[in-house]
Length: 159
Image 1 (cartoon, one colour):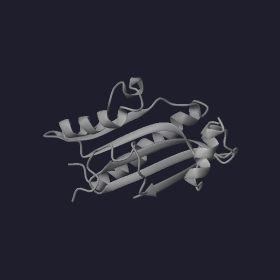
Image 2 (cartoon, one colour; image 1 turned 45 degrees about the vertical axis):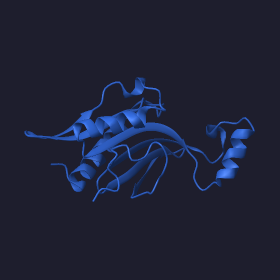
Image 3 (cartoon, helix red, strand yellow; image 1 turned 60 degrees about the horizontal axis):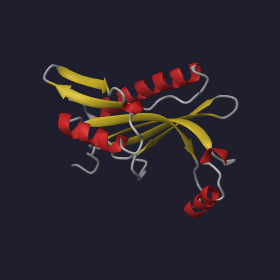
């Protein structure tokens, strides 16, 4: 059965593979990917969920939570390219959008490859970005993120 430790170790390997692929692709946008960590009578499996990239992004979280509940997935991982802006006051970000600009146009925004993994006892966000010279990486355990793209397993907070 998947434990927090084995899911995290598998996530590290998965993230390394995704970053290598992203780099080979010239750091272009990669389609969203989702993975379910399932346990069967014959052992554990990390299943790539098909066609997630074809779903409208606003329904992806609900679909992943429904899948996790239906198939008793211990953990769910989600990977996507995203523009990240940290340390900004939400009002400043709203003003930026109100001026007609996209987040990607902000001078402090970073284009990142992100992998999140969550489930009972695990909430991790792994990010990679290009700083102009090299690929940088950051891993945030128990990152406390909120929003619709969090708790994709539907299991956070379970004891």
